[in-house]
Image 1 (cartoon, rainbow, N blue to C red):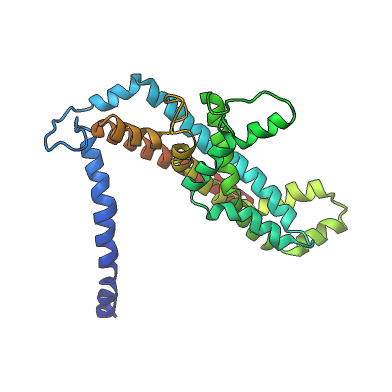
Image 2: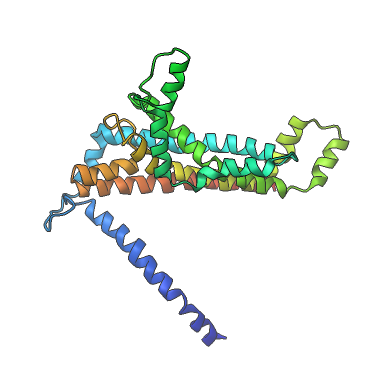
Length: 290
């Protein structure tokens, strides 16, 4: 048995090698570069210690990107889960055309976020944008939707939420279909109304689905990149950047790979810490209900 176990362990070796080459090495290299002034292409650079991290304390672009990242993460998670649960409750009912509606809701998930960003750009752009054309039909003035950083951040959060709400819907549908009917039958005998049934039966039994959906949505929102690049490019100025797009902009446009590596490491820590805090909280709530 020991010989068989040793033989089976050999099958892990290729996966471990790939993981080391494509994950561990780039990650450790990024940590090293965050302590340098490398410009991204030069053969020479020097160590600058923690200067890159100190610079972030006073860099307003980093502060704005950090705030935007939290807004994208928390805002998208809230919208995706609220609308995803509402859609799941609707589509868990029996009615004609249910499969078509499910497909339509999930279809945007299959579109590349970069493509979705370009599509939505022609919807929100000032000149000949679809939304401004609709306003024109009603005799209203055109609005430069993407000229404001605050409005642009809100639009990006909404677009990201609408594209990936199908993931939450599928997770909640699976959770709803896993709830035994006997609980609802017992509730009906006791005279419990639909609102009480939702809060005292459906919601508690959906906690495993809520944990999965919230964690997936939060991580996806915190690392938002493609839609921002296509729809606003991080503009106007730096006002709609996330930490991910700021890393790209700092590395390639500003040619400051060392500083970009430091920002990237902070982004990684933020995602790891927030997602773990939320996951542990939800796991505790789930355990309390068991």
